[in-house]
Amino acid sequence: MALHLLKLCVGIGSLDELKAWGGRNLAARRQRGEPEEHVHTTRLMPKRTVELLDGGSLYWVIKGEIAARQALIDVRPFTDSDGIGRCQLVLDPVIIPVVPRPFRAFQGWRYLEPGACPPDLEADTDGRGALPETLRRELRDLGLL
Image 1 (cartoon, rainbow, N blue to C red):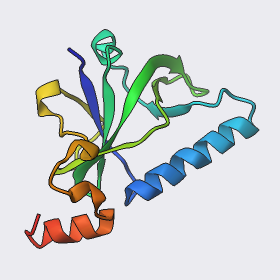
Image 2: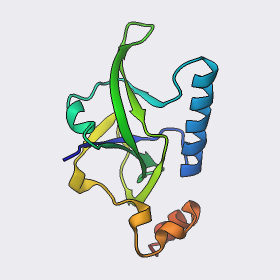
Image 3: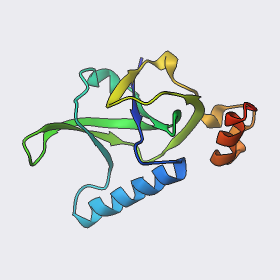
Image 4: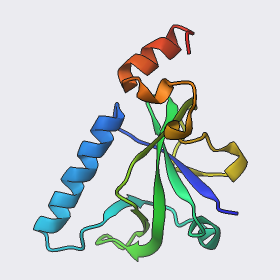
């Protein structure tokens, strides 16, 4: 069974901003002549890589809630120009909204067991997936969702 990662999406306030950030990163990689892939760099290398690459995803926490996920394609260790060991998380470019769930801030990333993952919003049957993200957040904050 796949294992997942959970990470704060620092500086991003919505799914639209996350999608735009991914597009800018792809354009920058293209301009530098690097492979066109979605890569997120983090400091620590996960020790359970085999489990992560068996269908795992990176779940993004945006503004205090788990809001989206991207499938993990690869996990690559590397050393940066300062000699510091880092890790590249190679992600599927498709960002999948999930049923939002509050989650407190933390540093770095966390493992997320399959049973603790929120379902994809598309699979949500109560119609929340059709609502704009800002309206969903506002209704949730008012206790109506």
